[in-house]
Length: 489
Ligand code: CS2
Image (cartoon, rainbow, N blue to C red; front, side, top):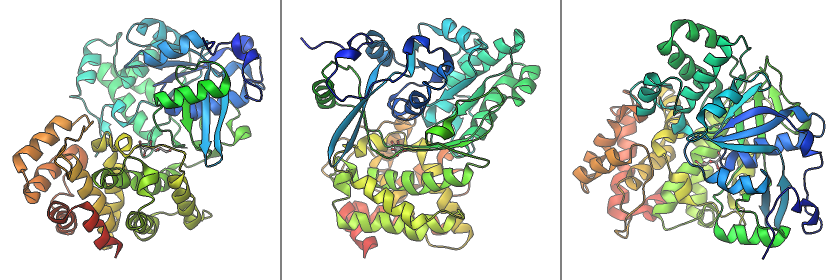
């Protein structure tokens, strides 16, 4: 039987496998990370791993707010796991040691809150996905009717949501005279620091006005994070286990590219992230817009249109010239003119993105990216659309992305097979689709009435309506391929 990846087995791994080059016994926790999923383990944890030899006081304690599966995988491995970087030349494994332990918030809530209130913890970082913010994606405000927020206001010392955990931990720090930690969002939200701050301070103020004021003084730097991380499959597990010579229950598969732009606002101190490739800047927003509109806007469009077109993976979508023309045009003609990035070569950024999407070794499922569209559309496509409408510019390709999403959330594909639509609003959307049948106009009207996605302005905009409905009708009448071929020209 293959040995398990553990601190002890590190010394006996296959030759040439990179392992932590520092004494893990000396590492102490300085960061609590909420939402210890694959993305964090491929991104921030790697930057921290690169720094621990210099400063061992920044170890990470991870926490899962929903499922215990990461804890179950990593605990028997002493927190160790492999990141396997994939490119056309092969798979390159490296063992990461930055995560000291993982807590399951459901069963260890109080222990976790006690740790978050400990002065040694100077940063609480987050990758809880868009929906973890319990907000209205169209306005970026706390959704006070969200069931988890209702719960957390009724049970402030036993919160369920990420904002609730932050507020309770900050309240405990305030009560014991400990300075606040810095809250660092690493999710794909526009102005993620400001958004997190708005949500957390609103919740704190609803609990107690004085606490709300105190939370106003907490630093919430914004960050732009980028690395493509497909879900790990059993075949990946087997491959990594063979490569490293030990069983890893949850390796993380990723691409060579990584980028992290961080607003330099850490009153409680921070690791020297700039030494390991992160860009520390005064204003992250332009980078966030660039990434959300170009990378993520393309991704979501490829996810919906690609899935409907019968493509399982992004690299397959990129094998279809019409799709490539659409995505190239979406970035060049529609997204790029809305960005203001002096000193950044947007054309080169686009070309690099197209190369990354083409990575044949990265099995990135369209279905994975299609998840939670209601939370993603506003910052990936609708913001760009609003800017262009204001300037009187065309939105043909962006509107195709929105129409493909509308077609996708009907829950039935072009072969009549069921689509497993995962979204916090899935039931509502599928009910709208069931009522609409194959009436594109009724589907459009029903979906744009969800103001958490479209706000109150977009649905009734004549240009938007004509563009989206045109594509949607074409998708129902002629299918997705013909619709894309028309736009690709
Ligand atoms: C993707 C992102 O799943 C998705 O919605 O668009 O996770 C994307 O891979 C990352 O933002 C890349 O940095």
